[in-house]
Image (cartoon, rainbow, N blue to C red; front, side):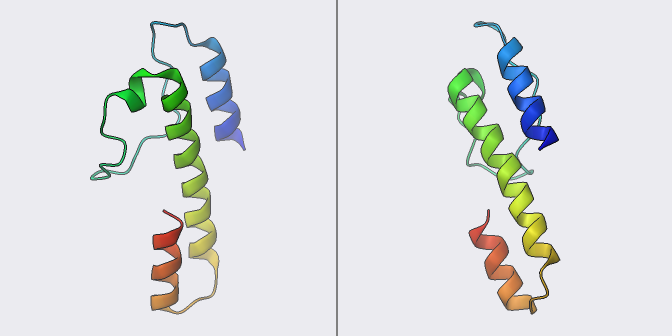
Length: 80
């Protein structure tokens, strides 16, 4: 919840021609957000960061569940 609050605060203070400070970044090697529009457009920047915050939360939930290796691997894949 704190990361979402920080994201909202950063977006509210963002000026039209300046990027907001990043609250979260994609994992190294994650190419899904490689296009410049994801960082340059305020709308897409917000979507990217909100998605990454939520995905990180779901990954932590998946890791905390008492599942066997294959089931946990599948769950982590679909929560990415």
